[in-house]
Image 1 (cartoon, one colour):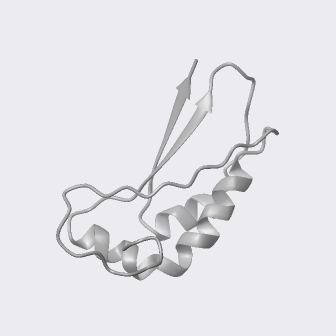
Image 2 (tube, helix red, strand yellow):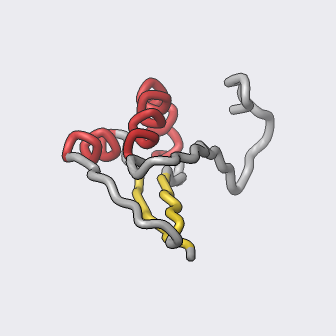
Image 3 (tube, helix red, strand yellow):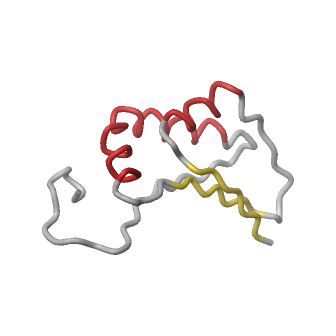
Length: 93
């Protein structure tokens, strides 16, 4: 799908959609929850991606230069699981 939700012609080996946010506080899970609000109405599309052999991954990039931490609650994990979203964390110095 294009930026306006229109189907794109052709078949693509790799497709990437990104959600970028920068937080000045330590509570990065708030951004994850905002992203889930956007993705949950698209659950049928995400299911179609996965059933066709695709993957849906959330990659959380953290700066290793700052002390940061937050709590991903069970409800947040359940919301990710309902959408079959893989979750990974990367820390960069």
